[in-house]
Length: 542
View 1 (cartoon, one colour):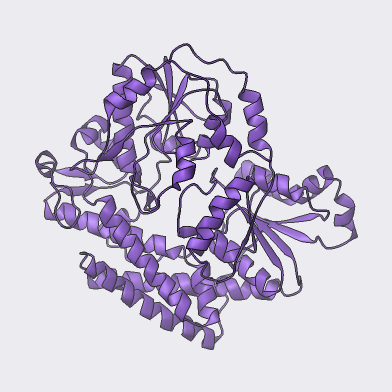
View 2 (cartoon, rainbow, N blue to C red):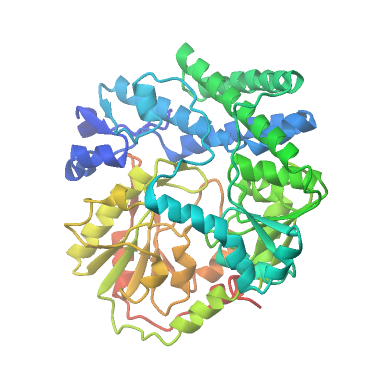
């Protein structure tokens, strides 16, 4: 049963003495014991309400404050994620303690570990970790040589020698950006070595403005927590106030430092995949203030399938131009842009790169033989980090791990050979969980396409998904309907011609449950020639 707090209530769990809060603690506790007892105290519906209310508070301040504060809030808008994860952790711990359950966590289980140890201090922002050893030296050398290697390959090395490059790239390239850059005649400068000296002070007038808005925003955030059912202690309130102040002051320091450093550059064209950190966001803001141009790119295989407001605080807020895969993908992103006005109130131009990456991958896979029947199934693993994503239902590591364990057991019981494809960055998290049950493989998904007869996705918002669409193999996906951000019906209807979607929902313990008969029925069908309309329409260069 559920209470008004969205909390799962389960007798056999309530009698348990310990409750692991992260995947490393679950492994220490014993995975089999953990999964028998698993529930999660707070529902997705409750969490979405928390996140949406906090996001609305940020937007109100962005809209109402002056241009300097507006810039600082946009540059540090990622802080809202820190706030809702902190409130979520406080609420989880409080709910467990009220049931006389002891929360258990690992040292990697932030923010639970800080709350349980009463560490209510705001960590400083680390823009770049210190690198040590031979491997670090190779990485540093690669970063130094990359501009010369890249420009030489594109026959642009003479322009590097003749003077200042006419465009800059911040961060790494993906295939769509690399393809698009080839259109432009000028050389490229890679801005990979930005160090922000946070010891630098702020002009007192600007610092006072930042401190004033920090106090106001922190007060509003703690009120939101109380209104949604999380009574905040004085220590927790002080932590929120300290965190907001720390983050906004550092955003202001970053902005002012880079503004001074980039003054001599003048107008430039800045390219980046995603303005996801404060340095990239500050760069975008300053370049546009200097009458330069900012281009950002889609990433993670996103074609604009889901109607989301998040981009109004990220890509669309900082870019003059946004690049996606195809003309039809442009239309989906334009719907998103027009439904959710960017908080900078400008209209970003959306265009396509005509990148042929997926055309070539489809061409490579098109002659792959269809299996006569499905014997070997590859389960695509969730990226098991500490983040609870409110953009889609059940995008949270504990819920996904519980689901994946039950999927593996069901498939093995039905006689299928199972491969678990671990996320390339999450081998440590999964280590020891599935090894005795199935064949666990790592690496990039594109290198594993021939290892199974069918692909099973517990979620489709992953870079692996468009690669799977390019094959001739059956795809089954467990995608929960509803949620805060929903797919565009016409695009999803086209995708359903290619994939089989199995119905999922939450049970009374906030576990993700699925229709086993529906899934087994989909796997039992003899594979048929695939429908490529979706991948051709939204991914292929046209």
